[in-house]
Amino acid sequence: LAPTLRAAADRADVVLVCGTFAMMREARQVIVELQKDSIAYVAIGSNIGDRAFLLSSAVQSLRALEGVQVLQTSSLYTTAPQYVSDQPSFLNAIVEVKLAMTRLNNLPGLLVDLKGIESSLGRVPSIRNGPRAVDLDIIAVGQTVFSSEGQYPLRIPHERMHERDFVLVPMAEIRPDWAHPTLDNRTVQSMLQSLVVDDREAPFRVIPASGGVNGRAGGPVFHQGKQTLVMGIINATPDSFSDGGDHFQVQAAVEAAMAMINSGAQILDIGGESTRPGAAEVPVEEEIRRVVPVIRAIREKHLDVTLSVDTRNSGTAEAAVKAGADWINDVSGGLHDEEMLSTAARLSTPVVLMHMRGNPKTMRSLATYTDVVDEVTQHLIARRDAAMEAGIPRWNVILDPGIGFAKNIEHNLTLLHHCRKLVENLHPSPVLIGASRKRFLGDILDEPDPKRRLFGSLGAAAAAAQGLVEVLRVHDVAETVQLV
Image (cartoon, rainbow, N blue to C red; front, side, top):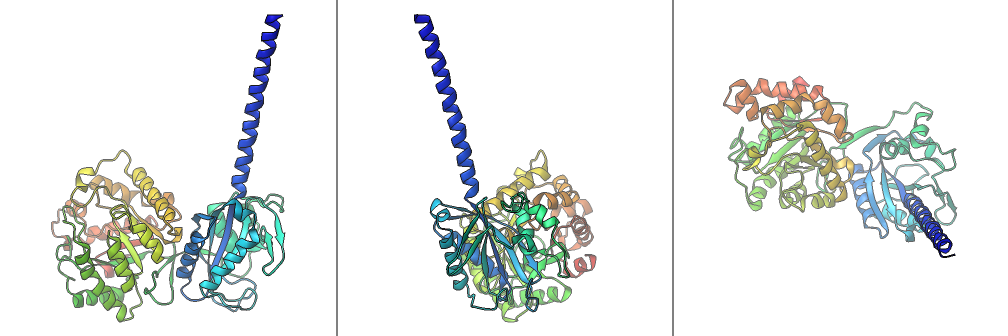
């Protein structure tokens, strides 16, 4: 009898253990499904005022809501008005958020909070589907199907999402496989592909040309991929490698700015600290003293140009943006100053994040790679993720592989040769290349004088433009504009 009882007990243990594992698998599946249902998609749009700034501010307001975690945003798209055609074009994007259980249990309350954000950013009552400073709509919440009436009627999924390219295009960028629970589980990509094309211009991706509260007037945008943008370099420094001292005085810098604008530059990059190899660090107070008067003087002339501040320091970035800068160009990719990314997010300012290793004094010794294209790509993707985690929308991130920073001649040439691969791997973020007059070109040309490296600079610019790079940072604006 004893062996029989022992065998029965062993079988019971097996049954119990198997049942426990089955329950655990089932519980994990339930958790996964609940997590999926907690992911929501909010469409945001604007066609009045500084549209990109308003949408960036809307993302900041979403981040401030209790029980709402912003996971990511799409790029920014310009779209033709739908339903009411006699109004300005829109900027649109999708925000992916994770909702706490308290939010999932009160979706009408979430809509009320979104309406509060609209009101706080200046939306006023208007005709249905008419102009608005900002618009926020709940598009979907996992696979939830929900309907309610009241002050703000709510239908989830949004009852007209399947016919709106300004919703489907940005949503396809971040979640093409989301399936519509009441339309035969058709995916976003499927709905987009079967969308009936009308006479309106299709949505296309844009780069904000303005940023901050005192930047370029009117909130213009650059059409990504439509043209190669030229960024002129103005170094308000005594010791930059190429033009140190040329623009150290405010008047000289302003005159150089006007000449670059007249030559076709769309962006000006103003720096107060040399980052050439071996350069010493400049105190923040001195850097501010150098760049802020130049930015303010250019803005006071009401010149139609995007102004970028070239700095690694959040204090300088904030002072420059308040003086009228639109972009922040950080050669450290936000690693030199831990407050840089949060500052750019708070100021709703586009930021250029560059790849480098170490600092100007140490970077030469760190130029070692197994696969420079892949390693630079992965670093920049990580910096983009860090920027979005800090609250910077995807559309406000521009990436720079850092030609000449912790790289030798072979590395620089490899990156230039593979510009198209970089652009594809970093999609949808715009890519900036700054190879102008750099030492590796001098070594190739056997030309020690940086100002005599024009042909090398243009050759590098041509390779970058052919590789579909969106922004070229250059000293020789007129010649580069002719080239591209």
